[in-house]
Length: 270
Image (cartoon, rainbow, N blue to C red; front, side, top):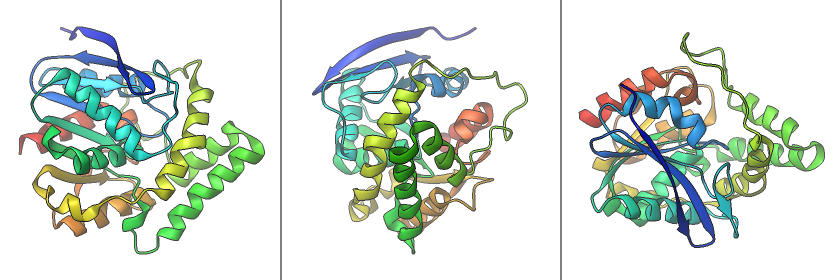
């Protein structure tokens, strides 16, 4: 039987966040990457709702959320997530974040460790931990330059190519996703505010070391050639903890939601 989904809106400082909740059990927050939110996380949330109370949301300015003040820093997104968790539970929550979402979740853990029971940080966008961060930073800067010169479509095409996002690396029964009407606007938010925030943010890795038992660095089985996979591996080394492998590539949670859900259950249950 399909879990009932409830959709609500939470007012936070400078924004209103659309979020959904489904299922029963411990609270599990999914923090999407890129310009994704509730819709991209929906298949994964559906596969997890038999064991968890799954929370998904749109970041401020994306899809069903609004923003009077755009988020120009990772800290703003982390505080939005903290407010969401505070509204739904007084207990520490499980968190699965991927790419940009993993960076937000890591910053949440730095600022509010009491809210996090365990975090799976899948291919976090943390260039600073790389031996040669200029390669990743250069890719991000190039995408921003293409956006300014040619627009969002060309920039997102380059962004996807740099991360080798392969829609064919998918589960065979995965339904075809139709781009939302807000797709281009959401991409513009990512390109205008979020990519610069990734480039300039300095994650407090030393603070994370104090929360090491809570943090599970993870990466895709098929993405060892892209820099976010390397970031996850380097973070695992910094924290002295194993790197967990998940199905697919950088966007495995979108294209392989069933396999990703199985790995999440295994990792959180271990």
